Amino acid sequence: MSIATNFYRVTILSSGLSTVTPGNGFIELLRAWENPNYNALPSKAPNGPIPGTDIPSSVLNGTSKARGNYRWHQIRKNLSLACSPSYFGDQTDQLGTPGTIDNPPTRIDFTVGYDRVGSLQVYDDLNPGAILVGAAAVKRSIAIVLANTYNVVWDVLDPTFDVNSHRIQGARAVALTVGALANNLTAAEAVITVTQITGID
Image 1 (cartoon, helix red, strand yellow):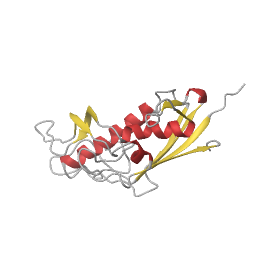
Image 2: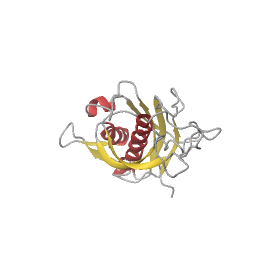
Image 3: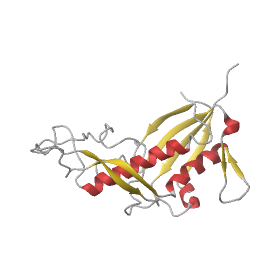
Image 4: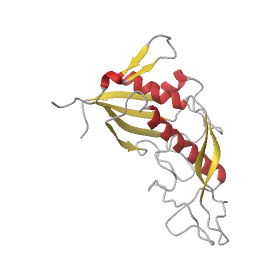
């Protein structure tokens, strides 16, 4: 007997969210040097960027990218707390204004699926005693990340970082404050759309 899977298509918009340090950087699906759209590497030749690659123009921009990538890590973690997704894919940052090595994208889209639908439950902090299920649970799991601050150690693509005497510049692990993008859960949920879909292609 096959197990039915509920799929949810998620869109997160940056409009109205914080752009002020440490609540900057929106969401980044990959580390800066992993995103092929940024054409970046975690290293730089002594006389300038390696041909065909790029690095952030400042430490602040590199740090912003790292904050966005940590939020994505935390979103994926939160979506696995109630029960592990049986599907996680179709991630894209290309449906709004795409990001650059210095700027975040304006929109993130992805699909998450659960085959243990009865376990997809989240306590509703805005209504004590209530439990959110289905699409509402998915939305709240994401909103919690957008409305919270995290203190972590995460890799930053730092254009000033000297790895060795040849002045190869690149990524380094730093203690990082990842600030809230939204003032509260209500504001966070306002930029998130979750739609249950019948399946995936």
